[in-house]
Picture: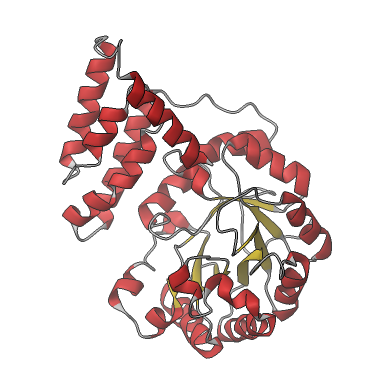
Length: 349
């Protein structure tokens, strides 16, 4: 199996995917604690970086406990991407620079960024070469299977990336047109693994730790990248690591343990963010994910989605535990709970 060009603690490393508004430093640190081998920043605009936009540069901050870490950048201007890579390398010194050729969001692709670049593989190559010339650290890239079904050709795309200088290729085997619908075509990951000489990381539809093991077995990928499956359950990395190592997965956390992780995450956000009120509001989505699927949690979600400060969260959790332990939820709101269960299933999908 080809070796990764940066240090990893395990032969088959687990990656936390770059996700806008989620893969921020506090969540990266939490996932590292639970066993993520490698983390990647949320994707950042090359233009914002090269212009040293304060909001963009602030998102580049990371701690020593997050290493090994990659900084993911996006853009369709090769020169700007090179300048951004040089700035990131000189200022922050990550283990690698990752290029986003996979984001399907309209505001990114309308300027040919993200998966929009896949319409022109010559552009993909020029961007990779420009970034590789600008930095001494390894350059990696994250791709989709193509822009559309008509242009679906993940092996050719991956080979062009490798030939241009990508040292690792991560494939999310959906087209941009699919967005996140349908099933990820894992057989395409296997085909790319067979075609490339560099490590291939598989990504897509890792909803449980068992899925991570199954992807590794079915595709032969060198590493597994977990994205939405980590929402509200960073302990999934510990479970997946155990299975990949041939051990029994640890039991899922109790409700009290789950709340403790959520509060630890909240404290990390408080220490990191310069705007406590705004951070608390932004953290509501994480709180919703942490309580997803819990018994009789419809009212709990409603309360958590209204918090205006982190101080409120511990009290809300305490009220829920007291009611649960006191038997006050025995009857519950069955309609709300059914809706909660359906929401949890949809979110995992």
